[in-house]
Length: 328
Ligand code: 3HC
Image (cartoon, protein in one colour):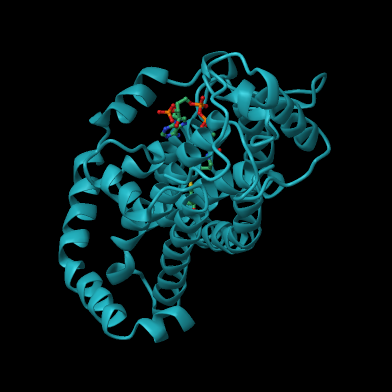
């Protein structure tokens, strides 16, 4: 664990130099300065960043699985090529984010081990199955759409490496969202059966996409502190509301119906009012009882085992050619 300039533990009242450093840290955050890896930071700031960035990285890597399932079954060569590019992007996002987490003094191996032994979280959304090709459209449109909503503000996160990683990731996410919406538009303008497929995918993915933004603000244990440290720029509920306000008109344009009987436009507030989320389902998925949790972890464990030889070969090469490794 990186300990240079030992961070002050803020679970004990700071005294003397620590109090000064904490005050100086807060001033930097308030002044919108970026905190860099070698800067002093409260231990909880470092800890919550490792927590969030590692979960984000795991989400990108596990998120490859539902879509990867359709690469061999894409309806045309063009769709296959687009889907391969998207899934490859997600892998890159994961590596970017593991790299950002490593600047906080944690090793990638440690984080991957936490994922493989089931101790690490990743986004609940990736524990749902992709039953038809329309699900691939709904994932791009809704899941990547929600990801953009949640990730754009992270480009202004107070921690430099995370904010910078998000700039490129968000550019690629917008391609992901557009290709998903275009799949849905093609289906909605296709045969009645294709339109029914699109409606079925919206029915399956709408509520899990709203859950991506996290628990209600009243139940979120990290939001208040993450907002104070400008890791988060908006709360979970604010981002969820933004997503609903943007996405419902898109569903209207597609001619398919959001599966929420309580959904209605409130002209006074200028927002959609929507029904209550099934938080029991959310917590069951987080506990590992979602439709695909076991399958997803098993797939990650097999990939890790099957890839051991690549890691060993790279390590042996680096051992043999230290100079080249240093130059790399
Ligand atoms: N799935 C799994 N766990 C979730 C969750 C979700 N959808 N929402 C919240 N949680 C967990 C939190 O991790 C936290 O658990 P922990 O204390 O064990 O870490 C707990 O529930 C309480 O939630 P909070 O709202 O208090 O936690 P955060 O302040 O961390 O907010 C978050 C949750 C909004 C997901 C935030 O972590 C975040 O913005 N993360 C970065 C973005 C991200 O990870 N997005 C996930 C999808 S990535 C993606 O979609 C890739 C795209 O290419 C498809």
